[in-house]
Image (cartoon, rainbow, N blue to C red; front, side, top):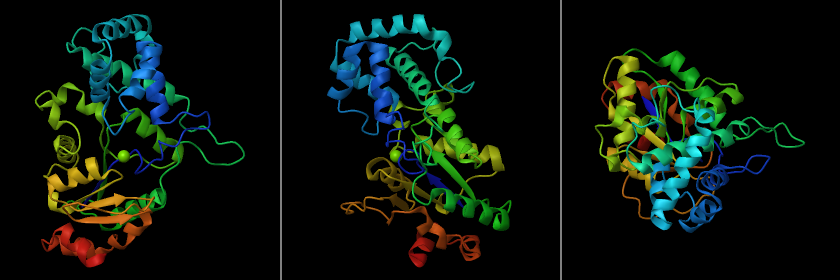
Length: 312
Ligand SMILES: [Mg+2]
């Protein structure tokens, strides 16, 4: 059984700014200003902010909205000045090269953007809100409680034939996510597919439009990670997907034909979703699935879609 899920806004409340006022949007805006000059921040506003886009998509939009030639040359002089301080924010073998190997300007600028953004976040992760013991970023409602139950359930009931795993598919970054789990004091899942992997040479074979949710490219990479860990194929019908964006996360689940769990704490109305959807505002609402019966049913060949309909 694979409980695959998104990270930002689903596992962690990264859109809520840190005690010093830095959230995902702010970090992006500041990074654009640093790399592209003061105009970078204005251009970031002009393109409408992040809107669930990947770094490469953001950079493409920025270059389209401003003077492409000037912006590229500013980014390159920034890189010349800052290069050494940008190493280390992306694990070895992931991301794109900051050197000559990266030939498309938007890919190189996206790589710079990711690392500058991470440099901002590095000092924010784990920072404490004044007068409370809350730390940034806070886990989403019920996540840590569910995750502990999920791991305990896996320890008791998973078998070689039926692993029980949580896998993360995120347009965020490895070091950010692993650091969050560290400050929360729980082990980070092994199955982690972030934008760092999607930008790397491991995805060279994949068309750019297939590398971002709702396209299934990231899920294919998760299947590869699964195979590496368990030496067997992932049974897609034993998977579900949890996310806070109907468009990218719901779209991915739809493209895979698996149930979509909409993490929807604002309790917005569902409209026009063409597949199986379950709305939750707290991860603990998924706990009824953590029952030996779920495993038994799946061993009998029943899909998770069907099981979810029986449980919820
Ligand atoms: Mg999200």
